[in-house]
Length: 263
Image (cartoon, rainbow, N blue to C red; front, side, top):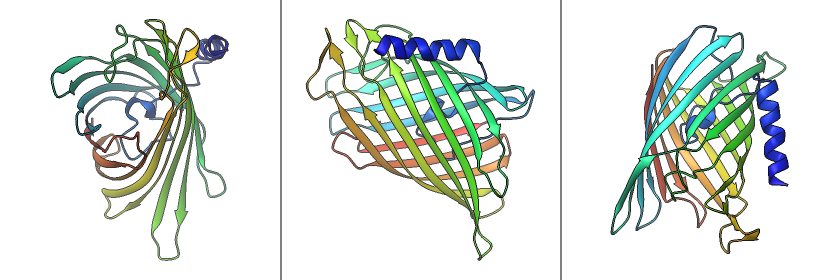
């Protein structure tokens, strides 16, 4: 069944490049984007993610992504990242899987309708399965995004963002990696012309890994987070951003800190 789902999504990705993904390049960054950048606008984003997974494990991840608006409402990109995981008795370092993606914005917001986009991301394995560094398996991510501004009587504007997605993972070392369902809901308010404050929630559900068709015990779990973030705009495509996510579930990371720049 998983092979059929993956083949369907590969088919959609191959015949309709308008389905694409950029936000998934860094799920932990606050300030989600629905609309694609204009034609021939391109740039670079560099992030630092620090994960305090539990009292024994900490992880540092440095994603680097490129983006480019190739036609009206269509943005594509590439992401690679280096990762270091600190255990009590060792340190593992390596490169994560590679991501190719894009986003198509098929509806621009006006007073009656929100902005809407659909996204697709292709995951290319960079090596064998290594826990907390890479899955070592191909994958596909399909998600939908909504963005809407709400005008308050006080004159303030609340800008909302919603992202709902599904990630299909393949097999690595005879291990069938569990699929993920994820969502992010956030709202942001301008404090000044260039400074934005952000609050939201994230959730990730992992369906559980399998070996030889049998689900691995205790591999199915849910992660939930409350996050606070800021964004400072030097210009539309030159931004500083940061966020702090607090784990709410037993299997969530204790803390996730993100900081980055977009050029």
